[in-house]
Image 1: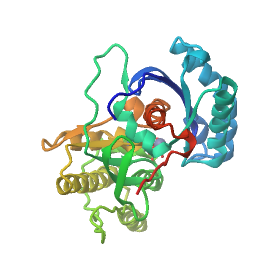
Image 2: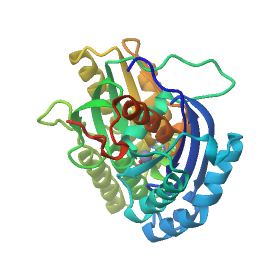
Image 3: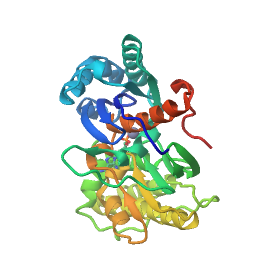
Length: 342
Ligand code: KG4
Ligand code: ZN
């Protein structure tokens, strides 16, 4: 992709429990990003309640879009295209954002760009905020470790929008394992940040949890570590021993982070990539960030905290690059191939 068109993209994200809208200039410079979180509402259920999430999106979607436009000092007429998360996610949540985006695109007669949520996470590393110098964009070929609530994948990215999935989890995603283990240790929702917090007071060497081997070198498996924690908790409960929550959280987090780092570095060497990129909610984890930044072998692109978990800035960035590709090739935006490409 050499000469890219200049464009402002308004993006909408509503795949799970965050209603978000953002405006981005030329795929990187963020003009605004609004996220209405439903976390407190779902906390009392111990997880996302899909029907409640869908209703909250209906209430928030219009104000969130209005706020994103007003924070960017733009009117609807001044945006060039509308991008929206098309999946994966909760059907009843996705449909709210999709319908809003379709309505806007139709009413304004502007292109509608469907963006895969996982592709969006990857593009969070292209986003930067005004008032700072544009950081260098990630360089290809790169290896992207995607660690969200539902997915753990290693993708080789050789150009914009060009991916090859090298491996993925065979059972639980890393985020899912963190969430389930948090529940099992009696830590509050959302699990990932709770495990991180508890782990700060614990010793990561207190317990040795198994790091799973997989038949294919770039696949992952996290259910074994989670079950090992469960077995240890049950054993202590049976003995009447108090559960050392902080030590268990620290040891579990260390096993998860260690597995993610080792596999990613091995794959990065094997495929001779220039850089590594980490993305998805779990990339907000402090121990994971420190582990990746602690090695000197590869440059690592990590999104700013605000763009690790669900947001629309990342959808706007991915949407822009899809728009730019469609712009150049004259392809119909809605039939552009989406994730995964191979
Ligand atoms: O990307 P995301 O916000 O939503 C999905 O697309 O799934 O990822 C959510 C996941 C959850 O499993 C959550 O526990 C985890 O990201 N997470 C974290 C942290 N913040 C969010 N895990 C570990 N440490 C964190 N600080
Ligand atoms: Zn996500």
